[in-house]
Length: 218
Image (tube, rainbow, N blue to C red):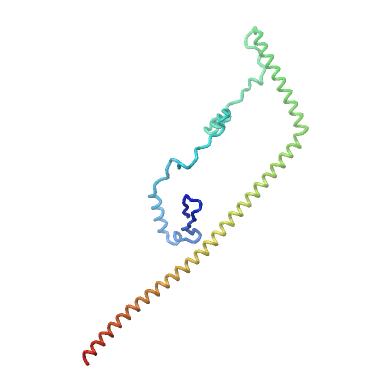
């Protein structure tokens, strides 16, 4: 547990050694008291802190992407594809007008051009697709290895930090124990000295009284 002030140069004060403080394990009744105390704490506020920046809005300049993001957030299904443009329907009316025949002809030309482009793409895929896919797989594998190495390095760093924290807190706990023991011994010594002083004062008073009595007798 750390106490930080708003000033960036303020020192960090630690008042907890979780690797060393095991009072909750040694004394289960303390855990119950802590849980009761936590239950009495007020609930966290529902509003964000004024310093927390507002939520960043995505795709503000692209209505299509923004609408798609809203659809995904609301879990709405993806709209079905319009397959009518892949068909060659004849004119609806019989006899058809010149405009309807022209529309059907334009649709047939579009379908023909679409098929031609598909044929070109398939030819390009057969010629260059295998090598391109190998390069893509190589790049993906290299990226995956980099991410895995970064993950392993981060895990090792985390383990090192936790190990250092545990060693530091264990060493600090031993020092606290030694200081507490020394403090107890010093307090005990002070009490013994005070008791000896009280006993000595009593003995001095008794001797003074005895001296006075002997002086009166003489």
